[in-house]
Every structure is written in structure tokens, then in C-alpha cells.
Length: 347
Image (tube, rainbow, N blue to C red):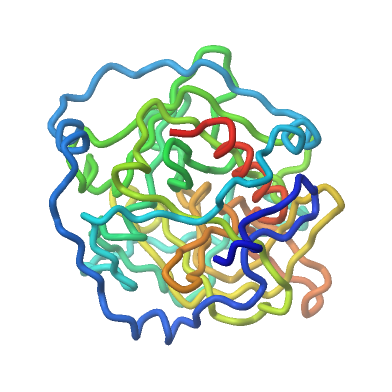
């Protein structure tokens, strides 16, 4: 990312990142792997060997007006991603054979927005993977006090920051959330103790708006991103519509909620935005319950950058007489929220 691309002002509609398109899926899969040293940092090694503690309670959670976040952003904050020297970088993860299980059901009805369900578009293209290399290990499984068996997906997006869908966060006065990077069959591939509970969360106060603003940032008790790396952030340009630039990953129950799955070559067929920085990216990617909060990302050079998080589904009357599309919550507001979190919740 150029210096100009990573320096911004507190503007609700500012475009974050690079405006040229990311790498195509052909360019991504043609890259050679980059091997790290494989020597795990001492602090991460210690965490990996530690026993699981009792849930650590969260401190604060709040929906706030967008203007309050804008006023508290460092205009010099860097929104690039990070990969530590010890971790390998693999453009395509190591996939494993997997029974995809029962297909997700297509939902009938004419409601415009469904925030909690998503629609699958056959054929099934998600594949289970077992990989903690960059960027695949930045994808996390999210557990909460309201859904201790798994509330959805998340992504590391700063040294001490993760992002998920706002509809996944607890709404009670006493709560906990647990974020596990590279979760696979009961624990992290980085080591059983590599995880963090959440001390604080923040999201935009948008009333009943769901999909376009459905993001929340999480402050972690443990600086997981420092040890295992994290994604960067980039805005979305509608010139990229119908181009297969994007990748999604998460823990959908229809595939295997205990193992991550991914889909490459994802495209966006429509986008809807408004004056407050929320944007709905509509896609026919195979998404479903458990994917909520998971990232949609592209690659710019050596940097993997998230555009937004999986939110729900929407019925679009303007496309071919009307059809359902899965929705990723994106937009400049997403970039502002991450910029705020990196400013106020540093390492």
C-alpha cells in the first residue's frame, strides 16, 4: 500500500486502501509459497502450551454514533496487514477431503433483508482446509456466552483487534466472547492455548439497519495478531463488480462447524450504499449460518485485505426481476471502525 493510500482523514465516505483492482484468482493461485522460519515466538509458545482458563468476562460493549468514532481516529493510522517472519505464506490453503453434508435450504418469502440466515447457490464450492499459514490462520471461530458452542466466525485485523458481525455479539450486561485463530477440531492449530477472550466491543448505532452496518470490532485480552499476524483493510469500488477477485472463509455448520472452509474466485454482483458509510455487497458465494462475521478479502501485492464481514441475505428486486443474494457488510464505515479500533486499542 502506498503512503498516500494508508493516510486518511476522518471522513465518513473516504475510500481506504488502493483503488486499483486486487490480484485475480489466477494470479493468486499461480504464486509460489513463501516459507517462514517455523520458529514460534517464545510468548506464543508459552500461550500454546497453557491450559484453558475459565471464561474471562468482558468489560464494555457499546453501539455508538458514527460521528463519535470519526472524531477519535488517528489520521496517520496504518491499515495494512501483517505477517510475522516465522509463519509460512500460502496463496492457496492445504485442503482436505470432506463430506459437505446436507445442503443449506433456500428460504422462501419476500422480506427484503434476512440478517441471520444465508442462501446457498449450487453447486457447493466451499472446501475444508487445515492450515495456519498466512492469511488462512487469520480466520477465527467465535464463541460467546449466548452461544458457547459457536456464534460464528471472525478475523484478526490488528495486533489486538478482531472483527465480526455485530449480530454475533452478546447483548447482555454480563457476557464473554472467545476468539480462536486457525480453529480446527477443538483448538487452534497454533497450539491449544492460542486464543483470547474479548475485553470490549464496539459497533455503529444504526437503529434497525442490519446488513450494511453489520460489523463489530473486538478488543482482545491477548495480542494474538502480534504473534500470528492479521489482515489489512481495503475499500470496494463498483468497477470490480462481477469480477472473481474475492475469497471467503469461516465455519459454516452446513460444511463442518469444527473446521474452516473457504471459497476462492468469489464475485460481487451488486452493491448498495448510503451516506453514512454502510455498504451491502451482494454475492452468490456459498455462505450460511456459521459464516456470519467471517471475512471477504482480496490480495494487493503481498497484503491480504478485508472488505467486510458476512452479514446475511437480501432480496434484490433490481436484478433480473428479483433474486436473493448473500450480503457482506462493507463500506467506508467498516474502514472507519477498524481505523478507530487500531487507534484506540493498540498493542
